[in-house]
Length: 156
Image 1 (cartoon, rainbow, N blue to C red):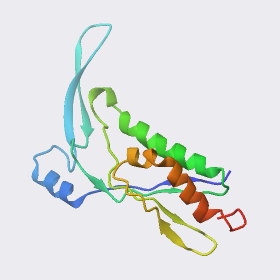
Image 2: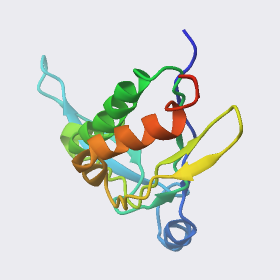
Image 3: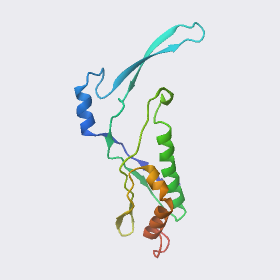
Image 4: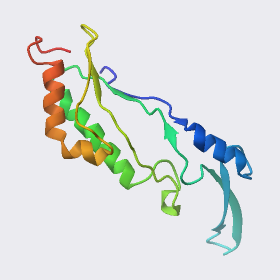
C-alpha cells in the first residue's frame, strides 16, 4: 500500500539548546541519570546510567504528513490524531515507568494541500493541543473532505 504517514525529525528549540549548553551535564544536550538494577538471583545492586533529555526541553518544527488518497482516509487521519493524544497520556521512548518520555504537543496547525493544483489551506480552527483538535474532530473531517474531495471527482 502507498505510504500515508510521514513523521519528520524534530529539532531542539534554540533557547533549550542554549540553556543545556550552560548546564554542567555529562554529555552535550543530555543528562545522565544513575540508578541501580537489582540482580534477582544474588540481590546485588548493579549501578547503571541512562542518558536522557532533561525535563522541560522544548523542540520545534514538528511536521507530520498524512497522505489522503480516498475519502475514507479521513477516518485514518483522525486515528493518527487520537494516537497523538494517547502518546501524550503515555510516554515516548523507553523508561516511561521511571518518569522519562513525557511529551505534549502544543500550538498545532492543520494544513491541507491538493496535489492536483497545489492549492493549500490551513484549518481555521485554533488548536493549542491535540485535545482541541479532537474536540472539533467532526469539523476537521468536514473541512478535509470539502477541501480535498467534494466537487473534485473524488480524488485529491
